[in-house]
Image (cartoon, rainbow, N blue to C red; front, side, top):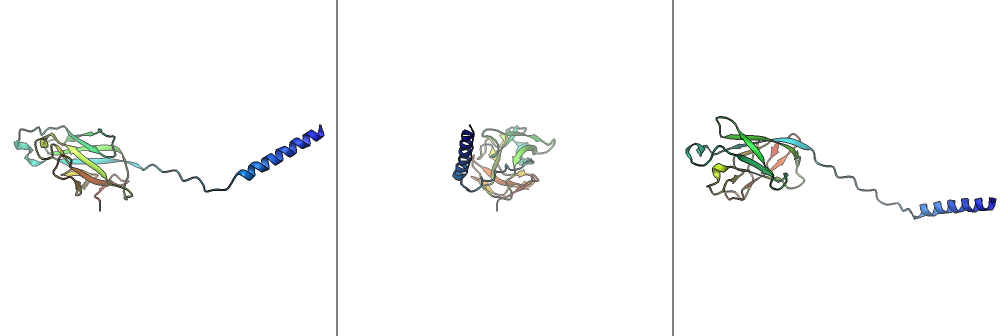
Length: 160
């Protein structure tokens, strides 16, 4: 019996030794990718002043959409009474400034512009996080969009 215990002990020790021999040192696992911070962003759009003298609907709804939102999603903007200003607050916007990737693509849908060359879509006269947009894609067409980065305070930044 003592011989069997010794044999078993020796087998366990050698087995443990062999398992440790097989384990090789290698690189550490990669660091987990951190999700970007999420911020609240104020959106402001100014409808063209000519809206007073038209048969097009100037009373909305004006909608806002952005590339960080799911496809087909949008936010309704609210008109400031007595003005042509439409505003809204968009929650859960991932921070992408300072830039490490592409800027966000943003636009509004304005029913007043439906009969114009942009067919109701525009990024002109749009502020994201207080920043007036100056960089556009397909300006003056139905595919018009603006480009913007958003920082950790919810402030917009035009691409360089």
